[in-house]
Length: 348
Image (tube, rainbow, N blue to C red; front, side, top):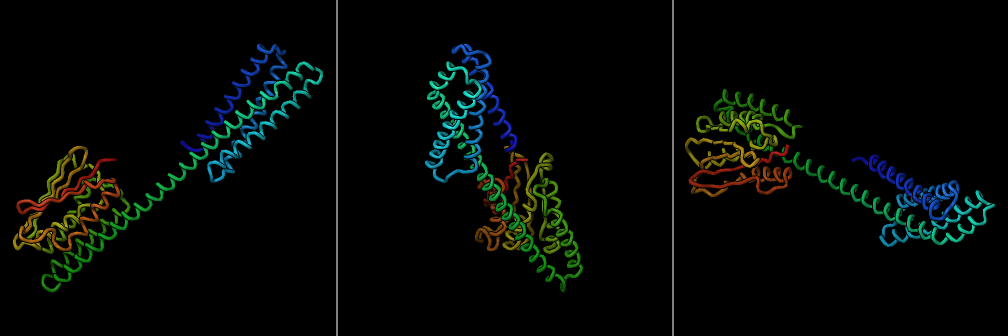
């Protein structure tokens, strides 16, 4: 709800409450104190209108002048309310005495009611002032919280952008090194790799502004990367992609799988001498998109292989920034198979 709507609702409630009080006070004067109807209406109108004006003054005043210390804030409201109550009583009496100068009974009643009017007026004005003070403080606190949330969002988005930008040079350097190694030995495959790398980078630029993409789009993008790696490693690398049809349309952050698959290829090919198969399996479970990447490894080598930490740590950091959860990335090794499982909550 916008601030203008809130202010409008508060003003409407303020006006209605004083109109109701005007009617009740006039009715009390007419029936309880046996005042003439016109006199009761005039007395009620003058007192309530001036009192509402005093309430508006104290409300606006505390909005512009609010000392930092709480004791000073409410002490200031009390003193201002007292001054306005005295001014209200004096001005109301002057207007009513001027209106009915030839009615000594009414003037005497008015003089006798001064202490009660002053006390009630001070209570009403100070109540409005205190309530306004609390309202302004709540609005200020809400503004501060919104500013803090906006700042945290900007920092989070900047860090996410930085992580995504770090992954591009990381992959690009590896690809250029591979192309350099192929130029002399297998120039045809080097040219093929350059073309595929161009398609891959073009696709990454298209996804630069996307916050979320479907699993189907991510897998198509990942296939470009796998095609590049298959040129690089030849028959040694093969892949198996298995996913539920229902999972294709689920959403996930873009470029989430490529660093994990890159780690799997490094982990599998660098630690073994034969052919390997990288398996990518996705499914839905408990409103989460699960994606498992499996690769074989040499159980005699250390886990994980040196140089594989950046990809996994960056993915875990991205998932935490997006979902504030630390349990969305799992790794396990069993029977010569290393498995990385990514879980993506479906919040969209």
